[in-house]
Length: 340
Image 1 (cartoon, rainbow, N blue to C red):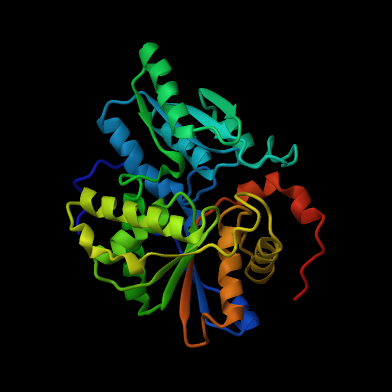
Image 2 (image 1 turned 45 degrees about the horizontal axis):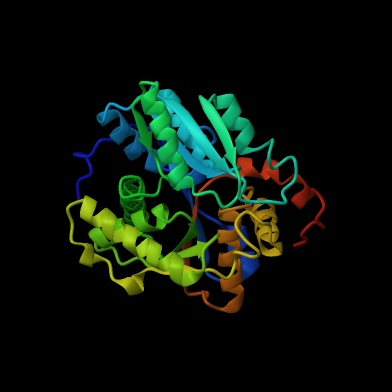
């Protein structure tokens, strides 16, 4: 399957590493655990959105855009990477941030990703109230920029549309090549799923290459049926964008688990805190508190429940975002240390 005919820029420092986690595997007495290090994609501390932005920025340039518009939560990893990507190609950026976590600390609203947004230098950063129709707000902002003579290009939250999902079609191909090289036959691929583009791209890439690797998304926001349906629809749209038959993906292959969301998006849970500390203290790898932390908590929880057995080999896709930890200092500094 060729992607070379599609507009694309170079942003990812890849292929990203695929590492075995021997200490954690032994500690949990479960399956062999591997981690795909998409926290190491390289752009402004890295993360999974960099893969999507290769295609999104490529499309924006192909359309003659001068100004990138996007949105996300206050501690959005996507927004940080989008500003950085736009900077590399001389594009202006305006971002809208939703106060999605209402009772967060001052550090949440002044540190972590938001601090980097300011350093990276977006043309404008606007903070909107929780519950705002962010997509409608992007459209209105685009009209303002057009009136100022700009040619805006809207990137949806998380970069999750059929163009952005191509980044994880490419990642699926990259991972399959690594598995073939290592002669490694995993039984599951697990990751945190939110705006759906990562899971949809992986599923589309796996389906298009007939690789038959089951994908499990650990939801960080939506309940199971809604998350699965959103992923399914975007997977079909991504396949169609590639000129492939959308029937390559069946509904039953789209699987999400929403048991680790907790009280809501971006709100810490005990299992997330344990997961962040556990991976850091066994393998020296930092997760983030919103996405990969809850995703890895799901992996740990399912191992303990017996969902994965000693006979399994599982790969966790690390989507990055550890810089967000600096917005959650009190969450970790005021918890009792996890003891092995």
